Image: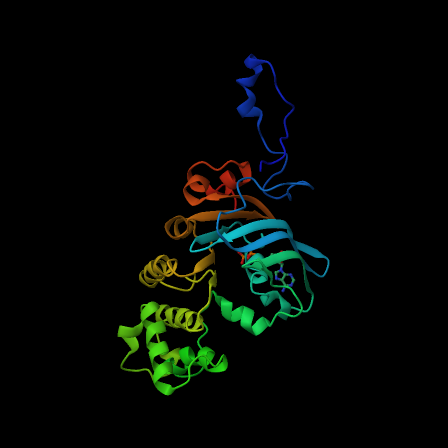
Length: 297
Ligand SMILES: Nc1ncnc2c1ncn2[C@@H]1O[C@H](COP(=O)(O)OP(=O)(O)OP(=O)(O)O)[C@@H](O)[C@H]1O
């Protein structure tokens, strides 16, 4: 799908030569896309895990997400990028109904997980959030031991039938999150006593312990130093084998390192989506280009 062409068609070949220079969008970094704007690039994938169609989010009168259409592929990492306030986190939160917790927030449109409408009233939101887990910007371990942080979800969901099974699951999750060797001798100590990077990996272990299919990450490295960030990025790459991952990031380098597809948001519109390499080397839309070249944002 292409953006609406703002130019009149130029048939004269001599004129066509100057067309690229004239091909400026009618909108700027501070203006919303015009009514009827359509996302540039391919919003669909061959093997979607989740699909968002005509998704709108309102906070009271504020229209924060506008007619967004996007597939989340199976076993892919997709990065959501864009200037502050463009709606990345809002869109991310629609994917596991975290917005339900905000009174003034209203979501319209359709979001499905394996073809099932996640906004269906009969759907159990607790189950949904186990299938679509979330890792937040600031590591937020429970005020419990390292073991209990990970064991909590499996216990509530009745996932294990014996202490030994639970211990195996906790170990597996910590191994998957790349934390086991650092904590195996202090499982009974508080999770809050770990370093920031370790706490974030603990939160990832907690998310994967309940066997999610999708993991939403909202700027998971923004509170971490470069070494801890590198570990989380490696982990994201490994986790992709088993999960679909949607990551909001302010770091374009991070988006380029960890994701296969990138979606660029601007004032609530999904402006462009495509293969990460293409978005960063050859974006089609002027707004995407403006953002990735650092002209605004
Ligand atoms: N709880 C809320 N109540 C009212 N407005 C909100 C709320 N949360 C977000 N908004 C507004 O919705 C818009 C999108 O916000 P959102 O946090 O999704 O953007 P973002 O792209 O994730 O920004 P940032 O990169 O700064 O985190 C902004 O204008 C914001 O002020």
